[in-house]
Length: 200
Image (cartoon, rainbow, N blue to C red; front, side, top):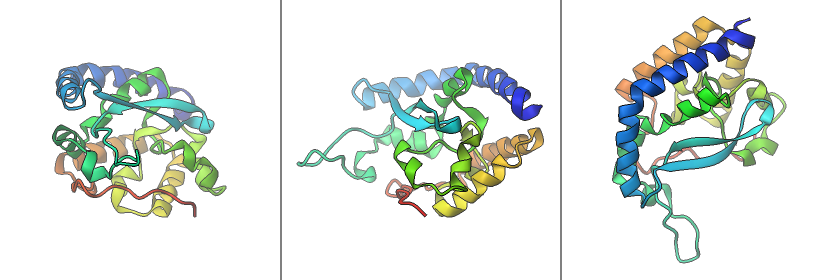
């Protein structure tokens, strides 16, 4: 019953409540990024959701669009702005995803939505991460986030899919708040970014 009905209801109610509570911070970050990114405070990208349905995720834009002489985007540490670095450090770039939760594309808790180009690379077990809605945070995020391997991350995702419960979600939300406050399990260096997934 929780997975089929109450989880969505809680997402909707908490999503609106959190967005309203964080709206002053949302507006402040948006203004700073508006100037830092030449009028582009938001970043939109297609991501696969439940049952691999594609949706547009919204995040704060923490990197500029600078390219090399061949037109290729520069490396992560060459494009992140000073404001963007601060926003990422405290996970503030995730705040706009509350809108995805309110709309219903995402949940507060679930496997993180990854890139569309990864879809053909998953094995049959890894594909099961799409049996539930993706989340702003998840079991993998509170167990290492960028510091664990792709295989470990997918194992945590499937573990969550098989154990969706209210108390489990509550535990993940509590651990997420704790890790954000102490910045544990998150790459704080601007030069570090999760390497691309190339298949099992």
